[in-house]
Amino acid sequence: MPTPAYTSTQKALHWALFGLVILLYALSFGEDLFPRGDPSAELAWRLHISFGLLLAALVAWRVCIRIARGAPRLPDDMKGWERTCAKAAHVVLYALLVAIPCLGIMLTWYRGDALSFFGFFAIPSPVAPDRVFARDIREIHSFCANGILIVAGLHTLAALWHHFVRRDNVLARMLPSSARQAALKHP
Image (cartoon, rainbow, N blue to C red; front, top):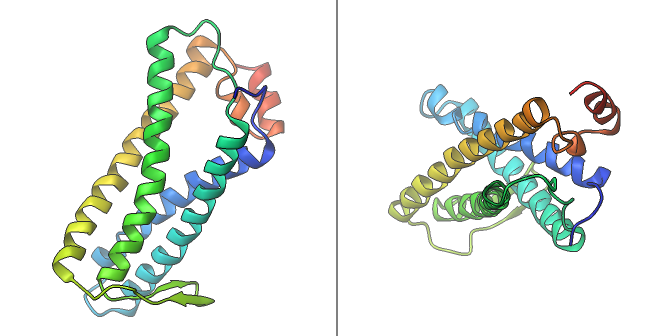
């Protein structure tokens, strides 16, 4: 169901998810940056799990709002193939935003670890550890994480193209109010 504009909640969730994806990607290098057994690597892993759970919760919220409110209509002058690409990119982004945390949860449990949310609570693994299966899940999780960076990069390029080349409001409608007003004045 098309709506005239994104709500401030939708905008906040959009940018929060963007920031979390970048942070989680950076934290994923913790195991590579520190020597095996270094407490910093363990801290990076625990933070990655906690922020990943936060991502899962925010994605669930974002999906619920998207289902309930829909999204603003695309510009009328967009060609059919452009609309198809825009819709496909959003489907892929949402699918990856759902899949990545689910795979991360499975990975954590199959490694034999509990899911801990910043130490406030922990959800023990309901499955027996299986390091081989965990490695397979990790490969898929990493593949999806790289994929979301690529798709989000294309999404960003498309938004910039809309703003600077087409000079429409596609980018401006996802910006906070003050930035939106500035973008609409100076495309």
